[in-house]
Length: 328
Image 1 (cartoon, rainbow, N blue to C red):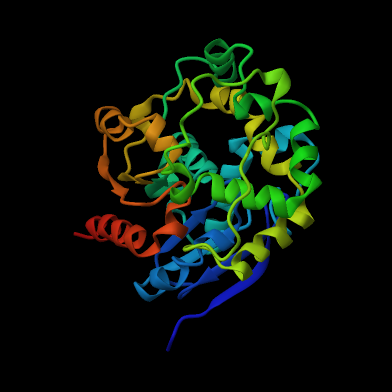
Image 2 (image 1 turned 90 degrees about the horizontal axis):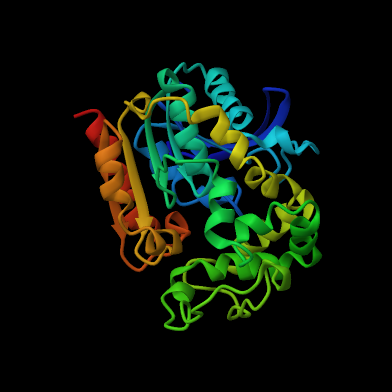
């Protein structure tokens, strides 16, 4: 019988999460954790293939996103709370352990989940954002590096300003964010032509971003794009931006935990033109030397930051290669 994708609302860890799922509830569990600006919709190319491969797949709209709960206090978005959300979903599905796959902020959450609750993670796959063992509090590190120059994570620390800008025209925001980190935009020779970052005082997140070409794009239809606009028009951006405002708190909660706690099998997938990969091209080598059970990484040709959406067939092939190795 063909597998379908279904949706429900789960009450877990004091919040309500909209959950998309597929597969037999009695099968081994995979939890998919999205990033910014995404929802469970970003895993639309993975749900059915994973279910057909014999997994029960759960992909929540994480707290602050879509129609899931969106607490109005910043500290509700620390990874200790976010990890508890995912673990609660696994428990409700009847699993003490699960395989977790995270993209973008979902990858950062995955790394903290592996540190905070190693015995609850069967294996982990991070997409686009590699493991980083911060030498000091991240915001202070970025302030020391960038000074009075613009960097988006530092801009996101400003109360109210960032979310108000992003909410002013959600269609424009989403098109510029999704296009701006895609392979087509990043591989443009003009992408890295700025020799010096602009002053923070004169710059906002959307300042100077080029208008994307009309939809559809090679990897995103008008209907798929409209689904994102609909969800972010409802949720706004306070929750998603608040994830960034917890970087220092997350560091305080995890930096004392030895890296060798991340002893479960881990894997990394990134796009050839992912800006994160281009700015940190030695990430796979670093993780190979740092993580005790790191199984390597895949760089997907001609993919940008939205790797599981831009190149779903290649992403799924890399993901299944890792998953199949767990049972070998």
